[in-house]
Length: 242
Image (cartoon, rainbow, N blue to C red; front, side, top):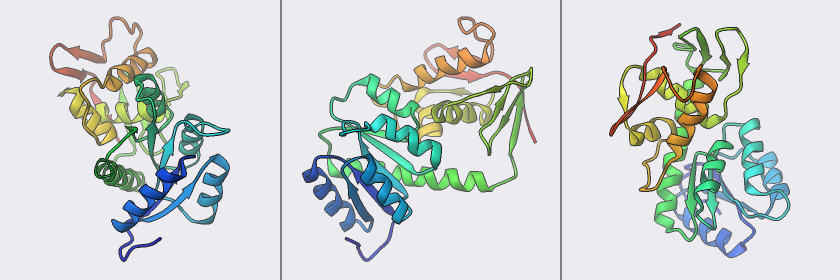
């Protein structure tokens, strides 16, 4: 179904057909083109036939689960991804974000909240695409490390490539672009994920821990990403952008 406007093409992947129908009708009324699929094979068929801007992806699917599909999507494209979690478990949410999802929403959810998340992720995906096209600030150097902001390649001081997940790269880019500034968790989530933290959201702390293990000589005594008690974190190296 297509509305008078065309705000983007959204694909809903959920094996519960009633959820697909409900969300499809609502988002179509808001001016989006909406397709549905009920498993990984169906998702790939839709994407092959018509470019998709955003996938709303249930974690509990027959065959390949949502986490596997999220990782596959992120490896192949920059499509926006919102995962739906039936249990609302913190571990599932964190793993989903680690796999490259842009946001998550626990079931049951309000349609208006889903719409707000859709708009936010689409804005972020658009910004991400524009950033990739801009060549003004492609590389950042700090403490002997080299980060390519367009290819997402991170090289250690010894020249070895260090692989980053999407979440780790987005967080490191936020630190690099705001070096020597105290950043709260809410601000980091906004910069890296374009969303606000929930009352029990520890995503940033988990991501910081992972980055420290990759960047710091001693992750237990970090010198680059320091904790500011009661405030958040600060990225201390001097950053040279070329």
